[in-house]
Amino acid sequence: MSAQSQSPAQRQTPPSIRARKGGEPLVCLTAYDAPTAALLDPHCDLLLVGDSLGMVVHGLPNTIGVTLEMMILHGRAVMRGSSRALVAIDMPFGSYEKSREQAFENAARVLAETGAQAVKLESGVYAGDTIRFLAERGIPVIGHVGLRPQAALADGGFKAKGKTEAERARVLDEARAADAAGAFAIVVEGVAQDLAEEITDTVSAPTIGIGASARCDGQILVTNDMLGQTGRVPKFVRKFADMRALTEDAVKAYAEAVRARTFPGGDHVYGAKRG
Ligand SMILES: Nc1nc(=O)c2c([nH]1)NC[C@@H]1CN(c3ccc(C(=O)N[C@@H](CCC(=O)O)C(=O)O)cc3)CN21
Ligand SMILES: CC(C)C(=O)C(=O)O
Ligand SMILES: [Mg+2]
Image (cartoon, rainbow, N blue to C red; front, side):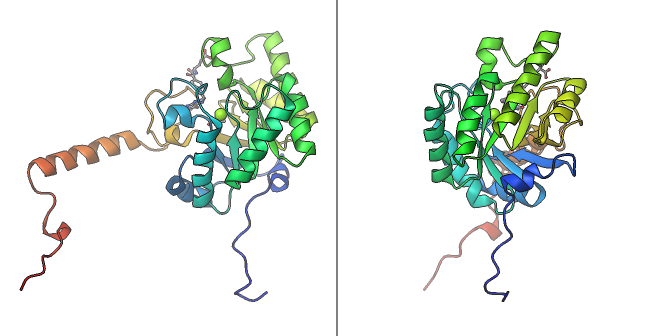
């Protein structure tokens, strides 16, 4: 192949992600904007445009008020900023639960309007039907079981799952349903290690854990949490940086410099044309 006809490195695909079951851990993070996506893209297998953007970017108290339009706008930005990772987009609350036809129409719109490779939906056992309907019609789907943030109203908050035997069995059923329906990966959130292990060993799709121990086929975190940009974070977050402190220090230094008239200095001013 000549240099001119070489296309840029291909993105990860649903099959390339699925093939990682039991192999090298899948590295996944959330992204909501183009410049951040560009920084994450070289290091990640999958970028998720999570509906957590409602809380992290838009200041909502939970993910219930997130709309399809918000997901599409941020999804387009993340696609522009990335070139290697698979980009998956969360289906927001209310956009897929009513019927499999509703789910198909909205998921098809998300993929067509963003160019992303896949959608993710929070999948109770009932959603097996929906996932199969989409997967059979060419829409790659990621399931999401265990702690399902869109169920926070019903659950009375963000509660870890699988603490009772009945709940353990239900989460395992959710994972089995998504797997049997053809999900090419399954996010497992907020469950103890032994349950994560059982799910990972039971399903054929790779599991992507968040607050679900290292016994998953990959990991994901909300990027702003692991960068230390958010305030209170869930117990399962490790802060790999302290961006709040860095930002506070920078803003304080800027405010002081403006008040002291040391910024802008000579280097930051345009020269006037004279005579
Ligand atoms: N910034 C951010 N990070 C996230 O991980 C995240 C969001 N937003 N928004 C959507 C959901 C909500 N998530 C959350 C939010 C809070 C907890 C939390 O505080 N959990 C308690 C345990 C609660 C219990 O089991 O009773 C904890 O201490 O971790 C967990 C998941 C995960 N997702
Ligand atoms: C944390 C991940 C799994 C998510 O669903 C989100 O960011 O919305
Ligand atoms: Mg989500």
